Image (cartoon, rainbow, N blue to C red):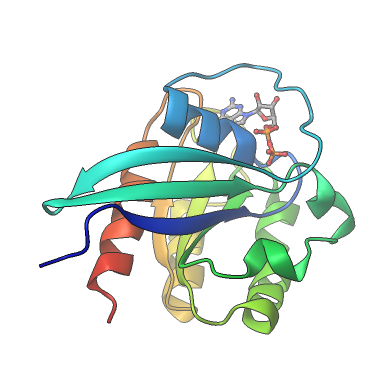
Amino acid sequence: MEPAGLTLKLLLVGDSAVGKSSLLRRFTDGAFEPRLKPTVGVDFKVKKMVLEGRAVQLAVWDTAGQERFRTLTPSYYRGAQGVVLVYDVTRKDTFTGLQGWLNELEMYNSNTVKMLVGNKTDKPDREVERKEGLQFARKHSLLFIETSAKTQEGVQHAFEELVIKILQTP
Ligand code: GDP
């Protein structure tokens, strides 16, 4: 028997403006706003799901802007089981910045399952090809998916696959 009401802490991590808040909004509310207000302070949203027959409550944490200064605190990382590591497929610098985020994750919480997300696939001016994302993910043992918070492509999958992998991890 699985305990009822399992709660998992998931984190959104990645450079500023890659779409972390938009992905969270899309996932939890099914909505997209072209110009989200910059959030202040760390925030999280709760979403309940049933996956593989198990009721799961997700607390998904969003960084709220501190990532601009690389000042996410250890408490942000503490206790997390899963990480959604986001880059913007139309901004190469957000892809090359991924290694820094992986280093930080390793330092603060090396015990997470990670989903690499290439966001903004709806935009025409792509700078990072899908296969580059896939290669990086394979190299670092990350799950991988491309998404658009705008059209919702891949968003549900990104979170669901991450949670399923967490549930399967002993
Ligand atoms: P964060 O700083 O990583 O939380 O990024 P935001 O969620 O605030 O998004 C930054 C900007 O990119 C906002 O203007 C969003 O509307 C926009 N944005 C986010 N995701 C997408 C997407 O999938 N497609 C497009 N076209 N724009 C997006």
